[in-house]
Length: 211
Image 1 (tube, one colour):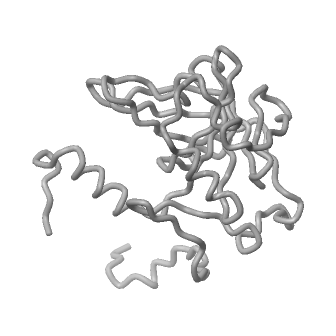
Image 2 (spheres, helix red, strand yellow):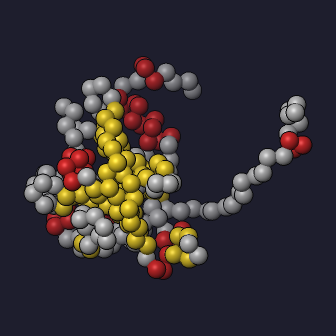
Image 3 (cartoon, one colour):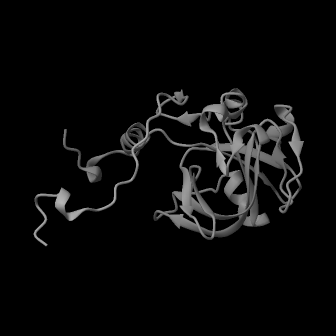
């Protein structure tokens, strides 16, 4: 199947992206608006952006009429946020928080989620998450013309990891059991894991090498 993207409708593009780029990690983002209302919402257009400084990226699609979603608007206002990571223990609450709550309604209060203070930023984190990334806003890049999405780049200034998950400077994925996003309404757990050590380049190994 050969697909020319310029001939596709928006929904067709959406289905190809979310069905072909899988699995996707989920950022369960807490943010605070100008009235002090704590917002929480999940985003699966999310990944590592840089190691040093530690940075993550989250793309937040705009609402019809090029209107910023609450999370992007709040982060633009407060210049900070917290990414609460998703696992098998909190995925039900994560899905519930994806509903279109009004801007003046806190998903945290509606879903009776317990908050904990962050270490450096003022935005609180969620007690039911076992890995948290406290972030300061680095920049927001508006994508599309007219505006279609806000790409948020955050610098990680503090990390919380449950003691049960952290061994020898690493997070134990089997113990953690993170959950990822697929297409449609589908989520995924970790399946079989296997190692492939990164190879060292050896010119003798590649017959096409002419050096």
